[in-house]
Image 1 (tube, helix red, strand yellow):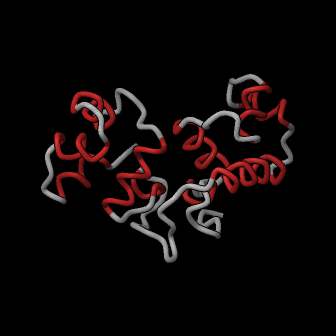
Image 2 (tube, rainbow, N blue to C red; image 1 turned 135 degrees about the vertical axis):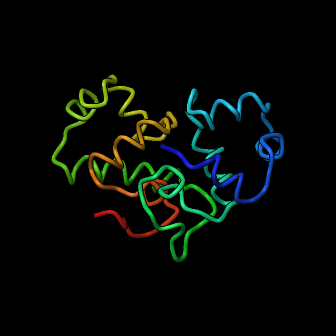
Length: 147
């Protein structure tokens, strides 16, 4: 699923170098590389900015390494809008999408209204199933490149 190890090795960095960058333990970073744990969006964004690649590329959703006019920061406001957009474009109610994602309606509503940070795995699943760029959903780019 992810290309963290290859990006790190291409840059001739050690796991401890990346763990310092993210301010986490080496063992925590190792678990992300080995896909034992899911890397949180904020750490993934930091790494993608560092390596100058898109989140879509790092997660294997796109073969494009980066996008033109990609922003460094994640926009919570755009994420909220675009989660609603994704749901409505696919004619899904909050109830229906929460069932698809095996979560509660109140949790999904929390994602749409910015009360909760949506987990990386849910964003990955939504991106793959509905052909949405994670970078687009997060407000890093202005056009959904995967539609």
